[in-house]
Image (cartoon, rainbow, N blue to C red; front, side):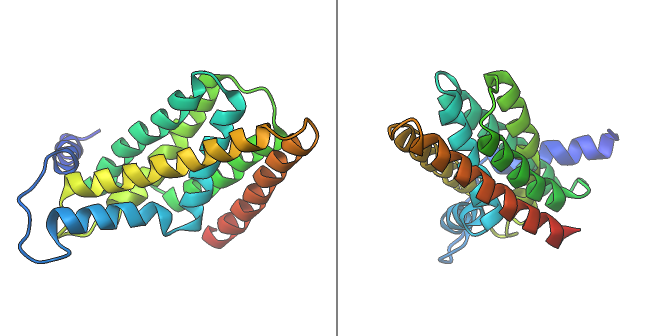
Length: 200
């Protein structure tokens, strides 16, 4: 990576992790940053589906995956956000986001045995694209730390919703529960194919 790119990445990371002075106008600075950051993930069906599927997948694996898989997504997404704020190029990130819905939905639908580390690696890969989109679309007048906190909080809540859904469905009988989970994954994957077709 060129020296200029490294400097840009460091500056963007600092912008996301260091609070700036709050702006005097309502909707700007920390408050505006938090709201904009929180609304970005929940405002797009692609982000919502992918993040809920991460939670469902974590619930399917169980054990330490319940926190490790979502935590991996959130942590790597923050790094992707720094890339977006820095304006570093990430070609085809929209396709990466759409593919994340297809792949994560497919993993849930197929309900194959997935190791915790493999799941964490896959969600971490896709988290880069989601984070990049959040960072690239950060309003110029938003407080970086508040914005990052907003989209990370929204993402964690969507993961928690997916975990809750997965665990609730698992309490059903051995036929209905898996069928509902697989159906949800399949619907997400089909929706992802539609999103992918729209980005090609």
